[in-house]
Length: 344
Image (tube, rainbow, N blue to C red):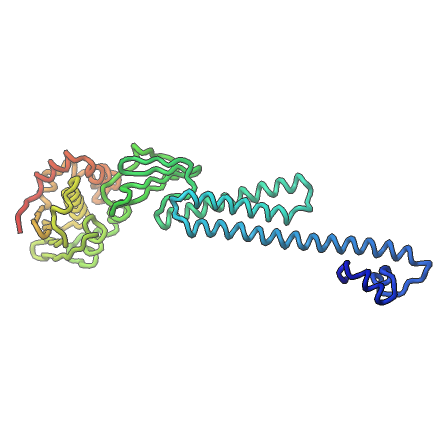
């Protein structure tokens, strides 16, 4: 089929009628009207097909453009930026326009239903990808409805789950993802340490009967507080002791009793997880602190309750150890009871 605008000059040049060009043959006079009607119908159908083809092509381009806008939004803008969610929704709307052009020949009611389903699926996919990003990369959600900022944390409320960003903008920042909606800002577990690394759910994997396993001790210390400052350790196999030399001055980390909280938490954790350790010595460039198993067992309130049939009860550990590190009065009292300090 030649371009329609060429039919008239072509017919004049060839000395034949447009009807004969469209028919591709000479037409006898008695068949002329019938062929004319047939060619008109074919021409109209061809024009409609070309128009539909162009519309579908445009729809695909618009649909892909919408996906690219959304992909660019989640790739360029940080999770906390409102522009990320705004451009993501803009991308969803652009894709919806493209999808609508692809199905424009369907009945009106069916078209409305499919457009609605497409938009819901697109948005649901955004929320699903955002959730996967939050879980795997430990970042704030992009599509939170309400953001509440507290003294130590930020709470992000989404339609399907809540995220608590604790110890925000510190070395010990961590996230708790509340799918069951069981926490509030007042009840969510708060630790002064990075709970993902130092929490009992992680460090319990290094439970061992004997201190002599250097690799196991190293992995445990790597996940306990203060490891972020660097350290080396020595094992006293004869007296069943552990010496840890941290590459930092102790006064530098005393704000809000952080050093005391860390050493108490580390001591209780090591004694609970490594069954035959009898003493631990923590050395800094300023001072040294020594603690014994007997001092912890005699002076740390309810220490024995964290064990059940020889195993560690995680809930009791969190209640009696992790949670207690938020109580400054308790920390100061236990510190005085169990640690011996000397200058280096």
